Length: 106
Image (tube, rainbow, N blue to C red; front, side, top):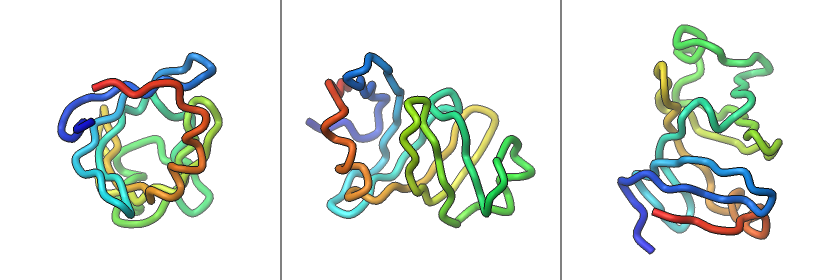
């Protein structure tokens, strides 16, 4: 399935759905964008990021993202605007949760 450079929907077994826009999918990392609506919190050095100004000091650094289903992932933050967060995730970190995923559509 080639879902790069298009919006995909990840459906978890508990029924929750997340929209993701992957720009690169590799063996070691996945890069792309997610809307702010898919996560509960984005945390940098212990403080929650809630604005573009706060995000500026955390760009190009590892932050923690807690998704709506309470999965917390390390996320390398590369961009932050009014609608989306961009960055990279390590593939091995994503694979830990693969058994929770019911479907991926693009």
